[in-house]
Image (cartoon, rainbow, N blue to C red; front, side, top):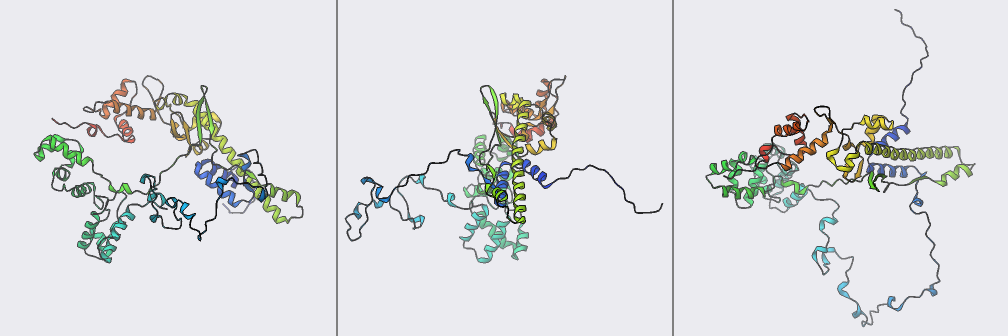
Length: 487
């Protein structure tokens, strides 16, 4: 077969993602905080975009009347007199007890009153101190040499968030170029710092360090942690008493001390900031009907600047490059405003569909949550599943039952025996939580027993499914939930 070049016509269809379409899709999947940041960046980059403050207040504030200086009359009680240093008679009238020089250091000013009214030093810090900075400050106050402090810096750098040492002594010694004995000595110094138990290799060593700080190193609590920690995990107090040759009362008293210790001492100095959630939509019940309200608080009200519109209309002699630049920015601004409006309308329609499918949830709670998939909402509002997925990501709704992410309303289904109404996996988890809360702590239900309870209601669940849901809820197994035997 001979090879040859040939020209031909071919008619095809393909989806071209224009920059405007890409921007609309991006805005659709942004969270509320990300949307505010994106809009603010666009306002800074596009001079045509403006924040429409007139929508906040439809009326302009009246102008203040003008007065001549000699027309202003000040009551005698509000008049101030000049302090004459040559005549100290009026100086005695000043209340010096309420005076504080704002240029003096804060530590030099201590107003009288309740000390609880004074702001904490943590309130004026630009950055919250973490575990490493707290230990580094204590390390600088020790009597260690400069070389030993360098070893201490390497040890602090190998501490986890929980305060445990994640590197071996030999590894740190190799990194620092010191003997293992020197590293061990510095580690012991760090283990004496605050918080108690920091610098340990595991939870067991951390608890022993805390007991040593309490001067209980050779007491029963330390013996239990050293030799019988596996019995403590299963709450087998009788076996601990037999092994230690002590009474049950002594064992219970020792365990009460152990329970008061902190297995993760570093968490108290975590510098993680809390993640605040602002609902994108609110569902309220008004006069027996649910009303959907979009949360527009904090979102700038965008408009196109009239100044640049006038340049295109009135200044006919403006350079062509200037007109082209302004037209391009106006098109970009108009598309951004349209995309934000479309985003809000889509969120409203999706929430309206969710309300229709999950009406029983809004009325009665989590136990009445029904199985729902993205396809159901997509078919209901005539949109693609990918669009619904983007809308429900990182979006939150405030409902009479609490604040939930929109994806929370989409759950898999668990079928009933005999063809009854299917249940959502979230309602099954809620039911497991209720069963565990109502169980007898002396005889807790096993995963198999919980599955049998569901089977009586016509819900077929495997034991491993119950175990998976229980672990997702953070509920321990039955042997750990059981109350200890004291006789």
